[in-house]
Structures are given as C-alpha cells and as structure tokens.
Length: 369
Image 1 (cartoon, rainbow, N blue to C red):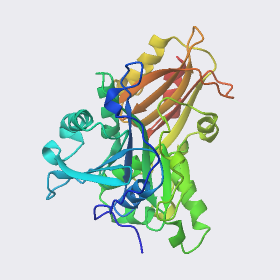
Image 2: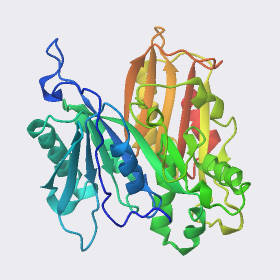
Image 3: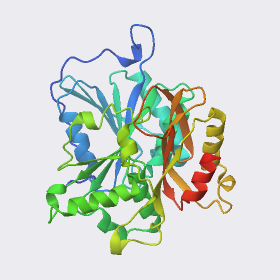
Image 4: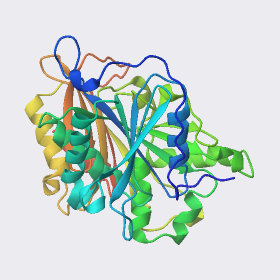
C-alpha cells in the first residue's frame, strides 16, 4: 500500500530511554538550550506522514513535538500537536492564527511555536510538516530572522520526501506555480528521501531519478527509502546550517548544472540550475556581505535585467584575517556563522547557488571582483 499524506499520522509512542530535563530550564550554566526544528516537506503522497509516524514510534531518547501544518482553503484552523514522552502520548489542539505558517501569517506562526515552547517545555525537538503545496524557503528563512531576535529555536535542516514512483511524472499535470514549488522543495533540501523505491518497476530507474534530482540540488544527501524508514541519525540533529563539509564541495559541479528530466521537461523549469563559484584568495567580510546583498536584494548590480532567482545559497569563505565563516541562505535571507571547519578544497572561498536563470559568468565575475 502506498503512503498517504491525506490523514493525520497514527502516532503511537514507544517506551523510551530516560529523557533530558525540561528544556525551558536550560543547562546547568543557566543558558537556555535552543530547540532544533526540522522542516519536513514534499509533494502530497510522498510519505511525510509516514515518516512522522516512523520517527515517533522509533526507539530514541528525544522528546519530539510534531506540528501538522495542513493549511489551505477549507481546512480548519486547529492543528494537531503531539508530544511523545516515555511511552505516553500527549495530544491537544493548538490554533495557529490564519491557519498557516507561511507568507502573510508566518510571523504569527513562529510566535505560536515560541509560545508553545514556553508553555510546554516537555520536548527537545520540533518537527514541522508543510503541505505538498508549500514553498519551504519563506518558512525556513523565518527561523533565521527570528533567531536574530533572540529566539530559543533554530532550524536544523530541511528534509524533502520525493515519490520515486510518481514524483517527476506528476509535473506534466501540475500548474506552473505548483511545478516551481515542487522544484524548490528539492532545491532547498539538506536531505532528500527518495521514497517508495520498492514500487519502481525497474531498479535502474532509481539511478535516473537520482541524477535528475542532483541536476537540481547536487549538494544534498539523497537517501533511498521504502515506507520512509531511515536511520534517524541521518535526518535529525544534522546542524545543516552551521557546517560545510568536503561532501558538499565534492558534489558541487565545476560547471553549471541544469535541471534535466528528458521529454517531460518544460520551458518553465529548464532554466533551473546549480552554479559553484570559487575564489582563490581570502576576502574581507564587508565585501562578501556586499556580494550577498547584491545577490539576494540588489540583483541589478550583478545582472542588468536582474531576472535571475536565488533559492538556496551555501558556502565556506576564508576572511582576510584567516578566520572562516559558513554562509547559508534561503530565499531572500542569509546568515554567516564562524567555523573552524577545514576542507580539502584548493579554493579559500567557495559558494554554491541554486536558482533559476543563473548566469555563471555574471555571478563569477561579481564574486571575484
């Protein structure tokens, strides 16, 4: 039987090992422990609810709150909140103003989660599920903007589920806007679960689908799954936005990589690509900040027609004083993090950009200038 995202998952908590103290109390030094948020996205029917079921019934020591973000026309505003702890399941209803955590209601949604943290203090991890029609980039950027205001939450990673059986095939039936959302869900992902591989008629299809996904997002980890069963260490506590590994560099194309799905490709999507920018010298922080601001906000400073779109940015940059920073960006928001990470790359500065209508020569020229 295939996975379905139409129904709320049947959450059954198993007996768990002893859990940490109430996270709202902080650690022994008096510091408040930030709670990680994993954003789970993917098309309708890709297996999001099945994954949530699996996580909450798998043996682990986490106290996990799940927010089922099923917003949309005709849906009720009350959302299910489930908290599993030591074999018991606590379930109640909480209302997110206007019924969604995106776009015009995103601020209210974040405040609702923060209020949840203050009231409960009975969990140390939050899973936030989006609908199949949700663009994850505005949702993800919320946590960075809120983090700057002293939030007690942080975005750990974006997990996208992909239906190996029907995923790309459904694109021909979708509207232009839905196609773009579908591609953005892949582009913004830190981990992609290639789900339902057991339903493929020909095992060789898996390699073809993997190559198509990598043409959109070459730096994400792709994990083949059946019924969304996966090692939890591969999807939780990843710290995806404070790390930049050799694996990211090795999978980043030297030349622009364009989305290719064969005969079913459309003009609307053919200009989606990944570009990797490199610079052989260290840079001043103010110059890097200026480039990022032009890239995300003042596009005409890079391209006269400023028609390109940036969906995801990640990079490792060596500053003029020898310090290193990680750059992470989603949508029109970015942040920098100091790091001691070292890589095998010959380039002191490397930046991976995923988006649409990206002109490599223009971007590389602006990056190195």
